[in-house]
Length: 126
Image 1 (cartoon, rainbow, N blue to C red):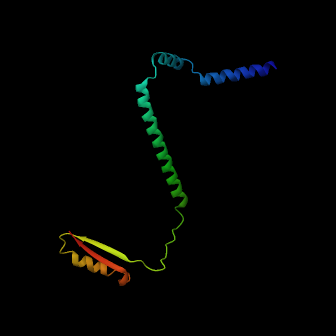
Image 2: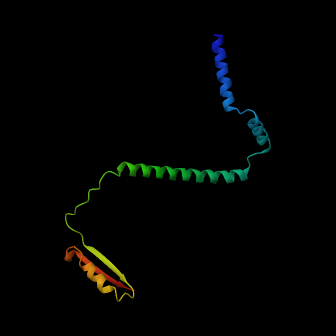
Image 3: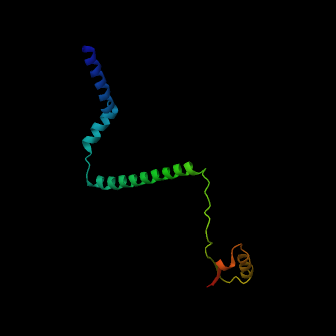
């Protein structure tokens, strides 16, 4: 019975040493706490600091989630969607003082492999 009590006391003392500092660190804490009092300026600095720290931590966790999802799904091939009916496509060509390029540009767009009735080409100038 006495050995169990001694064992319990020794465990409590070792836990006390872990929680309560000793040596030079204890001296530092005692003297620092004696001369420093948390005032309103400290709070004005610490509150935004920890708010920004929390926001950055959430942002970092979100990035970890994105990397995890990428690594989880990178081997799955995407199945290309098939249209029942092809949509109307509008191609806009913004042109500004391009008199030497315009002819080749329109010809190359007109050669696209897409149904003519569903292709609309707009040439935009100024």
